[in-house]
Length: 123
Image (cartoon, rainbow, N blue to C red; front, side, top):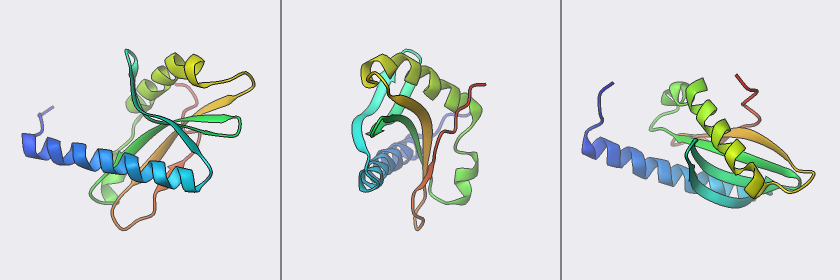
């Protein structure tokens, strides 16, 4: 595995942060409240934690320079880390009676955000 050059890494970081902002706005327009952003745990990181009613979603956001690049943006390894982090964070963000799930938001220029719901079923 090769390391990204510093300018490429900085561009990817900037795109990721912008993607998280856009995903947050989109989710709020759909009735979600953003509870937290970029929460790190020893098990992994969750980009966004959002609530709508009794549902709390732990959301992985992937922003790419093109729609075709999104095809490989998410894999089981990444989802496993998000799910592990969600398990650590559940006691902090869930209230009695709440449900939780793992979602993914995919973003590319010129395309509306794609919200993939309940993508993790254990594995």
